[in-house]
Image (cartoon, rainbow, N blue to C red; front, side, top):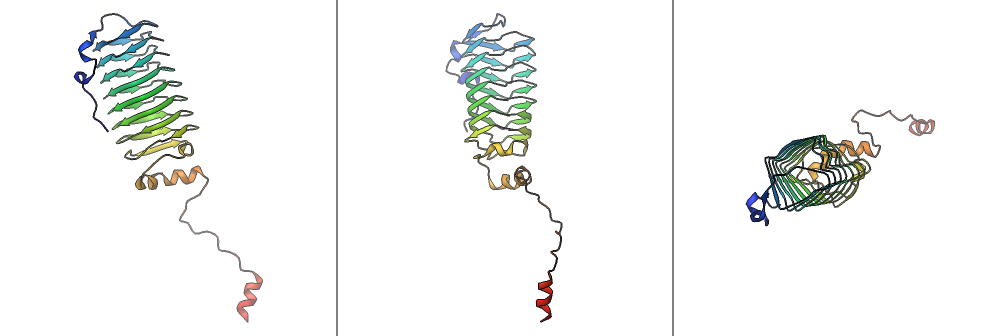
Length: 234
């Protein structure tokens, strides 16, 4: 897995201009550097961000519903309660982010890399994730219910109370992740790849998912039939 890029590694780094305006609905932002931007309750629904860099932005509340982020880089973003539903992310990289209470349902993520990010209470319900990696991340109380996950991997990441109920998985790779606290939707991960240690970790919940009871208590002794007793008396 390639390491995260620094600001100077971006192919458009030399063309970036400082962002000095305001976030408005439907606006088009091209080759801008959002450096240390702190905004509360911004309304940037339907806006477009192309070849933009975000250094330590702090966004609290606000609407980015339907916004499009193409070829963007975010370093140490702090996003709390931001509405990112139905947004589109293509060729994006997020490094050391703190993402809490975000509705990202119905969104599309393609070729997106998350590095050392903390997700807490993030909802990817009915989202589409293709070629997405979560590297060395913490995913706590994250919902992938009804989402499509294609070529998604979690190397070095911890999953705590993560749910995949009615998700569709195609090429999901869980190897290298741990712990795997998947609390719902294990049956929806049919075709996912795990290692042998993870299989043992998941075994109790996998058994419960298919209705198998696992117990070491002795079962009832079978009754002896009359024929069996007569057979022993001869």
